[in-house]
Length: 277
Image (tube, rainbow, N blue to C red; front, side):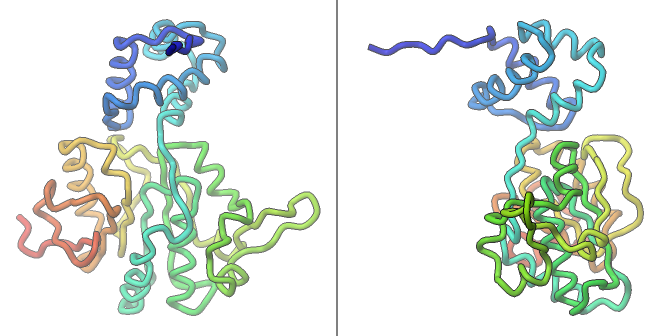
């Protein structure tokens, strides 16, 4: 006989629809119908943390602005952060080849840095391309989630996170912890110094990044946005790309459907379309 699990908090379809509307307006994230249980699980933690006993009350208080920094916690709770070092590895040799052809200091923007594995992978690639721990390059790493940014800025990871990395690369770029830090690694200071971490919401009217970039990484982010939101973000990327710049997308993303200002350079790598209007 099937037994129904009794939930700690009532969570109606109306509550879910309110959450969907709020996170879309706040962060541009489009939650599918199938995400209702995920939303309950993640936001139930926020109800416990705030001492509120119903989703309706929590959402009322959130919208009324009576809970201080809770908007940030709400957004963090609903942001997915799946990453690893050198994820989608085919992109990094392309980045190395690209920067080796340039004759000026290189700037790269990682627009969804999560817990830091991606921007550190970019920084390692730049070091290897120039065969130096202090290459003429800088990485801006941004994310909407302040919790993962703190992890990224610290640059400390369980040693298992680099288990599949080439041993020579791991020795070059990571320091092994001792004593209380045994079982952890820290990125070398030289690598950390190549990166500036900033909080950034891609839906915000103001982006705290300036200038143009030689490469922009926006991987596995657009899949959370609907087509109009994707189009809006890509339109803002274009003037931030130098004429030769590359835009790196995730393996399941196709930007050609939402922008005629880009053309495909290679596998999920784009460049500016010279014939763009």
